[in-house]
Length: 336
Image 1 (cartoon, one colour):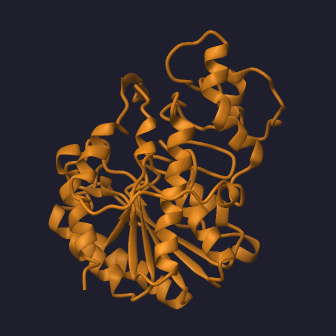
Image 2 (cartoon, rainbow, N blue to C red):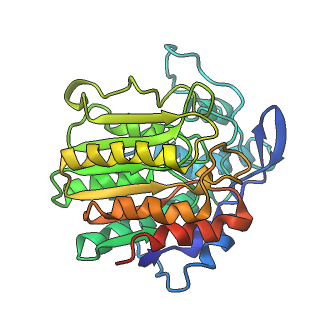
Image 3 (cartoon, rainbow, N blue to C red):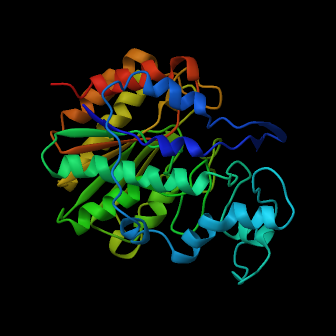
């Protein structure tokens, strides 16, 4: 399978995050990159498509914030990564505030997504990697793998969270629409709900969003991903959430995946985008499903049977010692 990655994506290197009340080493580390690159010996470098596709999805003020946040943090006399620590209550005004502390809270929703010195460079090239994968699919490749890192599916139009800053999947989906795809389906198989992707397309009927994930009653991101979220206005009926309990094994997951695939078939898209997270793995340190390495090939094969042009974008997966094998197993499921 054609795979894309840019070395610039390694510029993002946050040191710590706040998790369960403790400051711990950041899980989204270079070790993840190294593990996945080992199983992508024939990857291609990403070409630069510019900012237009990013701006078609994300708010201009938010993009400007990401570009300068760490420099503003440093200019304010702070060291290390730029961390949010205060957030506006729902319904309060979004103010034009000058202090970087206020902006960090305005544009984020958790304390696990700091802005490091190289974050903008990395996430910009992250989006380019997704766009390169899309280009390959639009020009004849049956499938392509965009090794997006850091993840992206938790990022909304104007907010970051869940280790995500730019929503690579949404950027690719919108670009596909602009390039002539009448309908695009997103089938998210990360452990966590793709809340940012859902938000971006929630009122649209041309992009179907389907997500299989841990029940948000017990797992991050909590406030999105429930099965009664079906879309609004023109998008009503074009969002499908399939939450599952902790401890879910492959047979139960497979049953839900078949339901998801049937939803995609009914939508009859021109293009499929699959945000793939290996954090459904039984040994993942921050997740609680029990999918085994060999199950990923079966998972991917079911998706490949849709026979749709397919862009795969990497999302989560934090069991570093097994991460390369899990990615390789998934990609093998798309082999003829």
